[in-house]
Image (tube, rainbow, N blue to C red; front, side, top):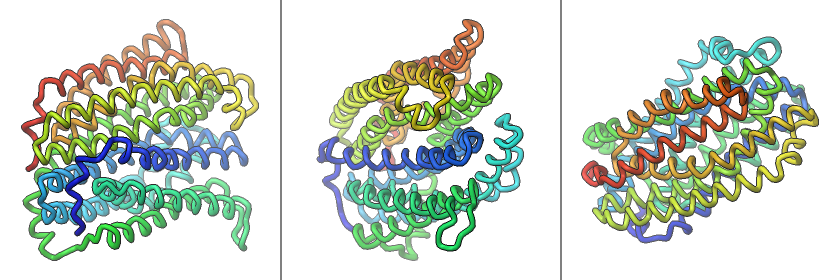
Amino acid sequence: MQKNVQVKDRSLLSLSWPLFLTFGIATCQPMMDSWFLARTSETAAAGVGALGPILGAIFMAITAFSQAGASIASQFMGAERPRQAGTTQTMVLLGSLLLGIAIMFITLPLSHNIVSWMGLTGDAATYGYEFLYIVSFGFAFRSLQTTLTSLIATHGLTVWNLVGNIITIISNAIMNIIFLNGYLGFPKMGVKGVAIATMLSWLISSIVLYIILKFKIHHKIRNTDFKRSRVILPDWIRIGVPAAIEPVSFQIFQVVLTAIIVHLGITAMTARIFSANFAMLAVILSVGLSSGNQILVAHLVGAHDYDKANRRLHQSLAAGCSSGFIVALIVALCGTKLMSFYTLDPEIQRLGQICLWCDVVLQPFKAANMTITAALRASGDSKFPAIVGSTMMWTCGLGTALFLGFVLDLGLAGIWLGMAADEFYRSIVNYIRWRRGNWKTLGVV
């Protein structure tokens, strides 16, 4: 396996700029799916889009476990122990594959129930079920794709992740066009075609990224890895399980808010889905910076260079909060034109633009919370943001959203501002935790 012990000495920007583009491309996939679906039916786009929080919860659980394993590998690399890092990579690859298969077997029989829980009815429910049932077969591919991305990034080779994701989005677009228009002898498949294209793009991405891991990083799976993994597995579970709780809790929180918005009417739900797609543009820079910082912090914790890890965090905070605000502001200023990309309905456009202005308030706090939480997880301190963060989300966050949305009668805008308040509460508490320095004692090396 290729040694890369100097990752900790690289600049934040050199690691993060490919991650900006990588996450940007990943964000484009659901936006692109929504666009293709909207060409068929706005109801189809809304029905599938309403499942976003459910799929997000599943993907965040997979991502949290993958990043926890990658952080352990990073700490070993920071401590110049490449053999243990290689064993960790093998363990995480196998574990993520099994996790994806397990989630598939759980989701398939519950597809109808999940659609009902989201409050979908009629054609929207039919479209939502068709999409969820088909993509469930690809969860193992998505799990591998996510894990391979994390492992390649932890070696500092973030540019190669960008290459893999470019191939993914291009293949997804081509298959969407083929399956929706019935080219090459295929029938016109509508929502089913979009789901199949998404699933196959995950498979293609997994193959490309594994080739990169094998031939660029020279990772080899050895029989001894399975024996050694029993030593590392407890740390992966210790860090990975709590790490998965908070983002999954957040996505379930989004499910509850989406279900509440459904009761405001199809117009409000559609506006929320379309505006949320564009709001993701403001998250891209923050996600890239927090992910780059997570890699650096894990390597620095492994090397026991805690002062530098602290400086890296504050650099990422400043860059993430400012960039999130600026991009959200630009998106809000262009709100009407952007919403017309999806729909010409004036009421949907009006509500969507209001949501995008509320997002200007949300994004700086969201960037701060992501950056601090990622740093805590990278250092091994994943229980605190999981327990305290989730508790605050379901008390202070939900309470604020309901108060603004229904007591003050702000409707969709109030719920969006409630999400901003939730991010503010959790970012403050997590920052206090970081300043106390408990994370310095929780590394695996």
